[in-house]
Amino acid sequence: MLTSNILFTWSEETPNNLLHNTDKWTINKYFGYLDANMDGFIVKGDFPISLHVVFDQFMLQLDTNNDRRVTLKEWYENPRIDFLKYL
Image (cartoon, rainbow, N blue to C red; front, side):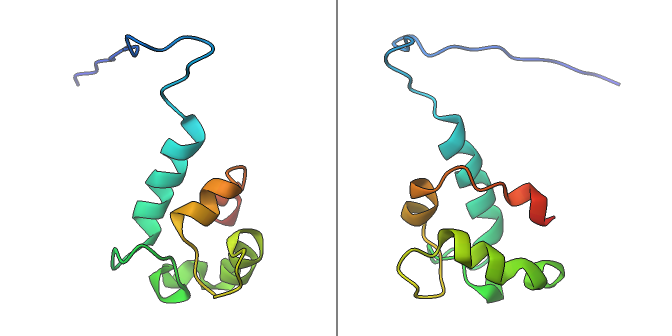
C-alpha cells in the first residue's frame, strides 16, 4: 500500500488575505455531487433517491428566493449548512 501527503500554501496568502476559502471549497464539492445534470441548479430530481426525504429541509435552509431550486450563490450566502447531517 502506498500513501503520500501533499502540503502546499498559496504564495500571496496572508492571515489578512485568505485565498483559499474552505466553506466555498466544501460547497463546490457538494454542489458538483448533487447537481446531477450540471445545469447550475439543485432540484429534487438531482438528489439521490435515498435523500429525497430530506430535500424539503435542504430547500428551507438554502432556497432564499423560493423557486424550489438552489444555486451556488444561494448556498454561498448560507455556507454553514451542514449537508452531512442529511446523509
